[in-house]
Image (cartoon, rainbow, N blue to C red):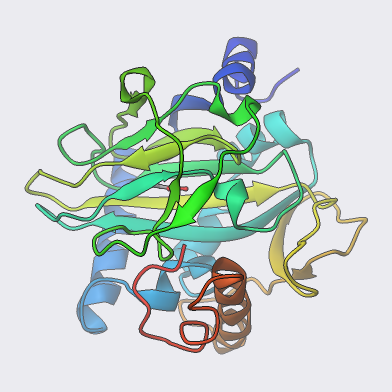
Length: 287
Ligand SMILES: O=C(O)CCC(=O)C(=O)O
């Protein structure tokens, strides 16, 4: 018996590769999280950049709590079972009226995780609409053979490698994933997805939680880490991350440094930037 998702939602996710919306957090909570994000940004020289945009659950206490929130974990449990690791958290922030976009890509193309059960929980901290550049997804693309990608390094592409599916996508078949503040979209590791620039007058802010079952292995490196957020880990393939006791908890910040450097290496592996950007703290958006 599923804990939060209706059987039709689970069936839809298996068939289409995504399901939305789910009421992940209240609009009030979302406003509070946005305020905490923006207070941090204001105190640290502006928009969240570089390494602060991933594995941020090791830096912000509220995000460490969010990845462990019972409603979200119940939902993830409905899809991947009771033992759950949170591999990372990613920010996708598009400034108001900015040309930044995300090219068509599949996450399983470059994260090295050998699972078919990664679930992304993409949570809107501001409205995700066609105007603000909501995600677009190609239904059923997660079931097709993996698509070839090329690294383009295009200027306004938010993906660091500018990784782009190298076959024509029939845009008419794409679904706009419009979600209101506090709502989330769930999607599969293999789904083809993208998003257009933000033409609205507000920032389009999303935080994405990535969950995997503990049997998953990292195939691109000997060491990787994740937070054990529910159940047990009988495999030990990932070093368990500390849970911060407060914002910028020194123990978790030190772990974040090691983990983000490793994650950066994974994202860039096999590219011409492998050596230069791996050591750079200034890199724009290392997803
Ligand atoms: O938020 C977006 O526009 C893209 C998100 C994305 O590519 C992802 O969560 O994997």
